[in-house]
Figure 1 (cartoon, rainbow, N blue to C red):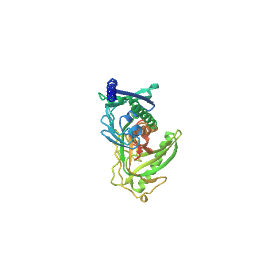
Figure 2 (cartoon, helix red, strand yellow):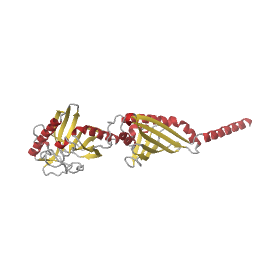
Figure 3 (cartoon, rainbow, N blue to C red):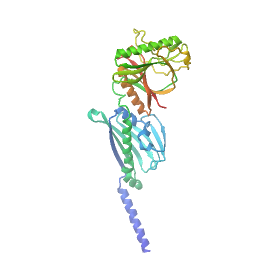
Figure 4 (cartoon, rainbow, N blue to C red):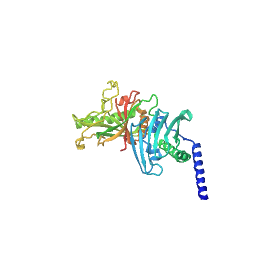
Length: 387
């Protein structure tokens, strides 16, 4: 009986100590981890302001996991739910509840672990020489209230949550390093109207121009000469252009520019909608024509399949029937020689949207070849997307 009484007294003492320690322990916990990247602020912000690339950097997306995105594509209301078979991850969700442009994104977290008011905040701050780098700071906070077991669980937050934050930020910086470091949202940029679009199958007349010397007059002449071959083929085959002439870039090197000249076509009188109210392969025939007052709205092309044998190909012209594809596209105004920056910026934007640019980029020369070599050149920049 004495031993039983001693046991009960010991248990009571342990229980009292458990309560006293539990009450003394903090009712909330917070953590903070930081990393630095040399990517542009627009790239970093757009990546963390949506869940399109969540599975490329957050540890919860590793292993056997089901992800379900809902709400807006980005910003407040965007939400992702996860259901992982990985031990310690389980089920949960992240939702963006606050978003400040190029500054801060706040996520509300729901999961199966103890605690409430779980929140993670990613803060972005320019750093380094001239503010060229970005410091990414991730904070985590959780409340336990009077849940004493939760307060004890808080002793291990730095181990359980902190290690996950460090790992995730490391993966985030590695992922960002693969994005072309071009700012598509810089003040004064001539790049605009970035979007994802669908392009149907097209009938294309193609001329491989080869590697041309990086001299404006030489490049312009090569474009016009090859466009003339396409025009002759159209006239000989009873075809008409759909939309403007396009240039497909193979390599924009220091001394040479390797490209193809391409024109979408259809049978004359065929049922198809033009891609835009813009000049086609022979757009430069009348150099006195005035440039359009406003940029034409983008529209996908449509053309019925054509029998390649019915096309009378002249000179270096070849015929290709393209496959339907998704594209990232943007409008650009400026010199043709500056298009390489626009291409890379468009590709960078596509990557922040969870897309992968593939193949070769190309541009519609909206107001013709001659205008393309002036500050008033108007272009539509395209990258094909995977999937």
